[in-house]
Structures are given as structure tokens and as C-alpha cells.
Image (cartoon, rainbow, N blue to C red; front, side):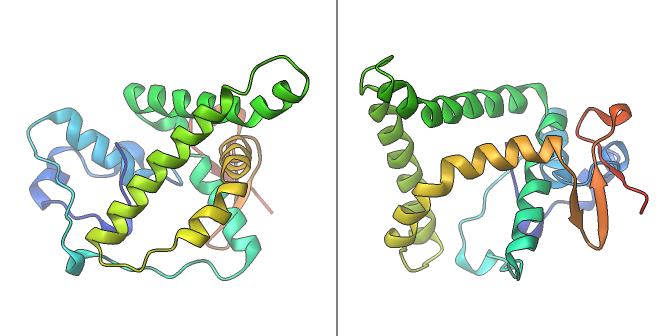
Length: 193
């Protein structure tokens, strides 16, 4: 479903068979995931997730808040180019997150019961399970305090960057990108300065 290009390996034969990045070269972000989806679509190749700690590729984070903001907008801009199955899943997750965000307001207005807390608890429990597994497999220190504090901004951040990535431009590698009417899918074109 998803992958990270900085920690992705594939056979040259596989890359050649699917035509490499030719069909997705116009996409500014998500080309790694789209490549993985093309490999899966062919069905001839196995896709495996490595859990060997020595296979972990570390990359440097962005240095400034503005760079982080632009990075997240770029990441949020790629969803519309995913396969129909991945897009359906992403849309379902987005709707779930949006409902979680709106639920406290509806509850305060007396429109719904506190049942929404169950959805929020399920979100946190599932994410905690994934994080705990990642920390264990890659022998990383557990960061429960950071995990807990980030829950306060996680839902607003998901909504901000997934919507903002499609509506607003962003800067990446010294260039400005903005969605145009002609590229209403997830293809972004460079703005002229």
C-alpha cells in the first residue's frame, strides 16, 4: 500500500518490466508508492517488508518549521494519483479522521453522545500498536511521551496537510509547485516566478 523511497529496493528487471518511472514522472511526490503499486498490479513479483535493523536507512529531517510545513504539504498532495484501492482506503481514513475532528464540536452542541471517544481510543490504540512494533523491531528507544503529546496535533495536522496539499502550493528543492486545472490529478507543475 505504501512505502518510503529512501528505504526501498527492487530488482532492475522489475523496474524495467513496469517501465520504471515513465508513467509517473510528472508526479512530485508519491512516486515511490506509485512504483510499488505498479509492481503489485503486475502480480509477478513478491513484495516484502524487511524487519532487519541493519536494513534501516536513516535520513535527515527538515531543518526549519517552514521546510517541515512544505514537506508535509508535498506529502499531502500525492494521494489523488494512487490506485483506486489505495485511494478508497485513504478516503475512508480521511473521513474517519474528519469525523473524529468534528465529533467534539457536535458533542458540545448536544448533537451526539460521547460515543465518539471510542473511535478516538481505537485510533490511538492502533497507532500505539504500530509504533510499539516499529520500536521493537528496529531496536529503537520507546517514545511514549512524544507519542502522547503528538496525539494533540495529529488529527488537525492530517486534515491540514491532506487538504492543503491539494489546494495550495508548496516549495521543494528550491522550486514552487502548485496544482493547476490541467493537472487536477496529483500532477503538479512548477510555478513560473
